[in-house]
Image (tube, rainbow, N blue to C red; front, side):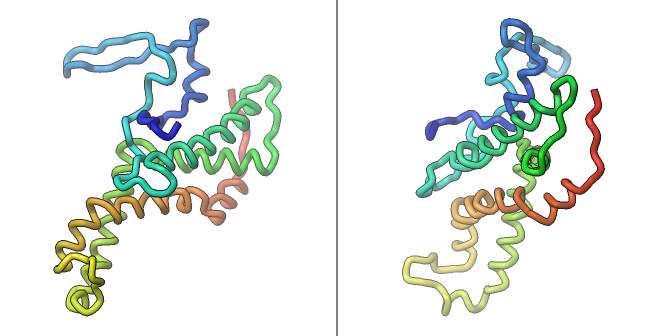
Length: 192
C-alpha cells in the first residue's frame, strides 16, 4: 500500500455501480482533438492521477499517507453510507453515516486534479505572502541551517516544506465540524 502511485480522485466504489457483468465500464477519451475513443476498463483503471497527493519529502507517515491513511478511510466509510442509500427500499442513514457522507462529498470538491492543484497554488501563495512579511527580520530570525536570503527560503519552501504543509492541512479542511454540522442539518431526501 505504501508504494501506491495511482491516487483515485473518483472513488472506485462509485464507479462500480456502472460496471457490467465482467466488472468493467466504458471509458471515453480523446487521443486527438477531433477523435473520440471508447474502451472497456476496470474501475481501478480510471479516475486517478499518479502521485496526485504524494508528499515531495517523505515524512514519518510515508509518501502516500494522504491517499492511504485519509482518503481511503473516507471512501471506505462513504461506501457503506452509499450502499444504504442505493438499497431498495432506501434505508436512512444514522448520524455517523450522514457525517461520513458529508465528509466524502466535501473531499470531492477538492480532490480532483484541478481542485487539488488550485488548493495547493492558493495555499502556497498565502504562505509566500506571510513569509515575505518577515522580510527585513529574516537575517535575525534565520537558523544556522536556513538559506541565506528570504528569497532562497521561499524558493526552497515552495519546492518542499510549504507544499507538504498544504497536504498536512488538507484533512483538517475536510473534517471541519462547523461545515460538517451545517451539511448534516440540511434537509435531504433520496432520489432514484
